[in-house]
Image (spheres, chains in turn yellow, cyan, blue):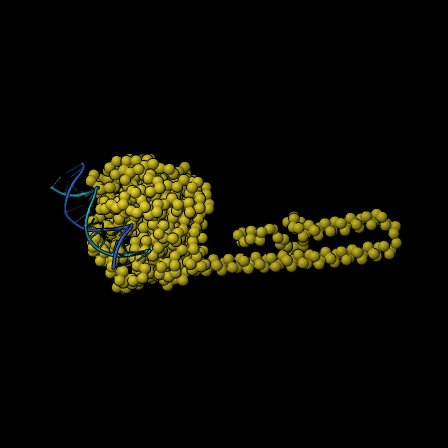
Length: 599
DNA sequence: CGGATTTGACCAGCGC
DNA sequence: GCGCTGGTCAAATCCG
């Protein structure tokens, strides 16, 4: 094992028993053997000298010399034996380390495999015992940052169960790789009983949220929602988990970021510690959509807009809305590990883990071969709490600042920022990545395809995955249209980042090794990795109210596709009528006028 | 005129 | 219990 070697600190002589010392250059290089060789050479010299000097000496001298030689030989043999013993010991310890490593590896794979097997079983249980949902869901967290109501999810699960093997294998595959998250649109397939699992899985579901969504189909919730919440609280007197939030910080001069969704402002409030009013928006994409967002300027830096998303969309999202989803989904995946390592055990941990599920209320894909890319110069900060787990995606940080310690980031937040209230934090810093994948550009959140025009092997795999998704969609006419490839692309991108993987590995290690009780600050250290691909787009504003902060990158998501030509690939999955841009009266989809990006 | 926004009031949660 | 704060409602207002 390569990893074990540096642990010894310095090169040690490893002499193979069947191979006499000094037979090879390697042996010659080892200090002990060099010592022996020197001795041998000295002995030979002495012998030669004694031969020269005493060529005519008496037999007594010969005998004396022979005795000395024999003694020296004996001591040399003893030394060699000691060295061999030492080498044997080292070999044994190395073998032991290898065994331990393999055992741990198998243990980990076994755990992951069991969790993968559990998922479909648990889904079946959920279907067979729908009345238990309310009690069970409190213990569940879901990877689905989904936009689908529970009924649709269940339908999807049924379809999955019918289709059987393939998809389950996909889940297993994703889980077995460990360092790659599996995010699925209908994530009930990725549901685990976390409370019963000694080793928390990365696969976490937020059925709490799903339940809320199912209950909130009678929007507006207003007092009805309050009533439902109180009922939930009664059912869960201890630590009733609230919606998780995803907070996005970006430099934007507009009143709100255009994230592609349609929003209606329903309130405004001056929050304590911030002279800037906080605006409350509600998603109008669907009359029953429970998603809300809060928009507030940063008190420290008025140019920074803090947008907090809460809830799950229960309607098809506009293509442009998936950009933010990609970003926040990546953030949420971070929160998975971060919250698990920082929260209190058992139910509290589960509740905090559920926070990851709300990420902008968007589902996203990621299988073993699909990876996220976080935006360049962005950092993710998650704060977990039983009540308001929040993960923050900071799109404002520059490379130098983003690589600083976490406290630097926290210092940038206003006093009213949720992080100040929820002490458990973890940070994953991706600001060091060189290549932009997601960026704010002239007021538009845009993906950038970089200078890797040729399709990488991973990209091929990704294309295969897309094709598979298309086929699946074709064969399942009742299924909701899958998310566009931007999400998958983001999924692919972020998990392809070694930084992410190492951070995730660290989180995994802490979860498995310590049962999730260790305080977690995970920070990526790798930098300068070349992403497998990168998306670029010019900032073509397609929103209805000008060129505010937006996510209209999808109109030219691929370099092969001209920006004004019909979208290709998974773009076809986005229902045309779901695009908000055709509606000139959309509320606050893009009221802005300019965005100033410091990335 | 219909829909979006504004804004004061109300309510719930939390800390002291 | 009281006050503070965040979040939401809904009537009034604005706007295209």
